[in-house]
Image: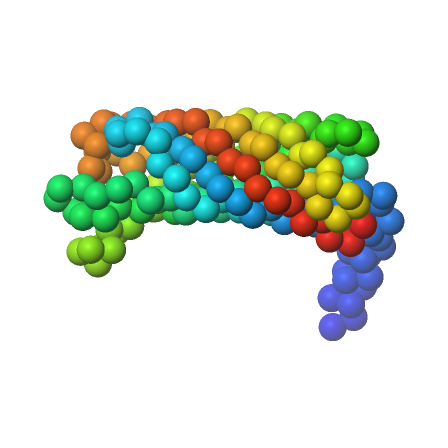
Length: 178
């Protein structure tokens, strides 16, 4: 028990500088996403959420959650994509805009609600960047452009390997604990 308590105290001591920074500790972004993925016709809209834990003024841990409607497939009916990608974020902070770059790895999943089934989880990658435009002290407007790749194999598309495409997302960012 003493070992666990000592480890916890050491962890808190090293984590204390994170809480003393002048940048928001957590940024939550919610908004609109639009993606095109090789093997699926056209661009598809959905919900996009960006969550960031800032470790310093320039480095953060980024999580991307996307939910997209892919229309109707003649064999499977309604098709949806869920993407969950975790990675790193590097930012340059100034008063006017905050440009950033992101890269991550995670998973993707196709859902077919009409038949009550889904695909196996697929490996997913994301890299890109964007800008956060501050709106006061507690909010910002996010514009994000990233390349996303999913390893669905030949499910639905007949295209083997990775299904890649460009994702455009925008929305409002809520800054917490500034």
